[in-house]
Amino acid sequence: MHNCWVIIKRELGAYFSTPLAYVFIVIFLAMSGALTFFMGAFFERGQADLASFFSFHPWLYLFLIPAISMRLWAEERKTGTVELLLTLPTPTWVVVIGKFIAAWLFIAIALGLTFPLWITVNYLGTPDNGVIIASYLGSLVMAGGYLAIGSCLSAVTKNQVIAFILTAVVCFLFLMSGVELVQSFFQGWAPSFVLEALASMSFLTHFNTIVRGVIDLRDVVFFGSIIGVFLYVNAAVIDLTRGS
Amino acid sequence: MTTGDTMISIDGLTKDFGSLRAVDNISLDVKKGEVLGFLGPNGAGKSTTMKMVTGYLPITGGKAAVCGFDVENHPLEAKTKIGYLPEGAPLYGDMTTTGFLNFIAEIRGLSGETKQKQVAYAIEKLQLHPVMNQPIDTLSKGFKRRVGFAQAILHDPEVLILDEPTDGLDPNQKHQVRELIKEMATDKAIVISTHILEEVEAVCTRAVIIAEGRIVFDDTPANLKAQSSSGNLDDVFRQLTLVN
Image (cartoon, rainbow over all chains, first blue to last red; front, side):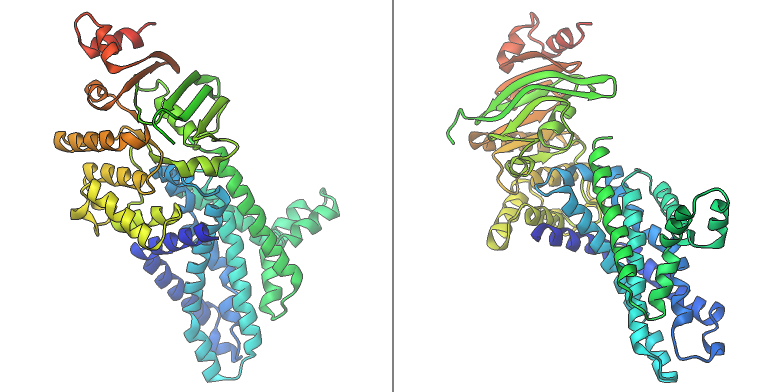
């Protein structure tokens, strides 16, 4: 799709023409490094793997991805450029996908820049690089899930701060839905299929399987469906909020 | 198409915002070679009508077609025929003038030499040379408006819809934009909205005044002037729009 590519190019250009990209990348690298070495006890563990690096990604993404996604549509609605965009001869869904892919590519770039860690662990020992590659892919796919939720919620409002908070909260619920804290709230009164459904929606559960090096089709399908559903709703929200 | 062909046909167009009827059963045809001046007090429904014809706002009732393409059933075809300057000329502030015009040209399906030629043409016509490589955010209001205008004529559209094209321009720039509109009128149908009554006299071949969503006058600017005993356009305008 030609127009999709044009949108991706513009969006990626917009990231790097403002300080946003550099601030994000520096903070992402600094925080993921700090978490890995200090909280994750990378050296003390004495194991040649990147588990201490990847285990923090769901939490890191929880507030870094909303910071990327909040501007996707809220900014366009605020400045009125959404009117320009939607009166160009291109369907809404092409724009939605173009913007999403651009943001995803940007996160992929930030994630790719953590490669010194991978070199470090290979220098220090002999890790299972298959697991590491699977973990990188899993992390990226999970980031896509967060991002689709963020893109969708960014279209709901003109206010980027509201978009940020909504996204962080909804992502948190998706992240935690398998955890005791949320589950115990439903235990006792909700039927067991609801509990199971909730548990199966958990980002954490699906991510942990991938990080162990098991690329289960179900996990990939899960994140794929999250992306699909939220982008579909995203396009619908944009059509509904035109002019408001 | 020859002069006199109907380019825009609006039939019984209606728009409700909740319980408020913003546009009430408007019908009009715009032919090639016509420059239609759309007048009315703030909130009369000028912009809303334009937004429906350009496919931005969904239509509550009635029909609008551009070059024979219904804007609801064939939105993409209709949009390729239209050049549109939205109210307030929203632009991507992070892009440079050239970058922005190239982006719009590409999404309009122009490429290679045609793209370069058309972008150069628009820059030439709107005299944007001094700001070609400047970020749009740093431009003056007059330049921003002209970049918005340039964006609308890039693909040499058959229909031009301009929402307050001379707002924020100094007298020289106003004159220049009016000359440009007159020059382009020969092979296009042009609709401009404005508050400036002299502008209608200066560039339009037809004046349509709307008040509270309804057409209250539709004739030549000369006949509009003839309606007033004092020969003052402001008086006629007040007479027609302050009926209630």
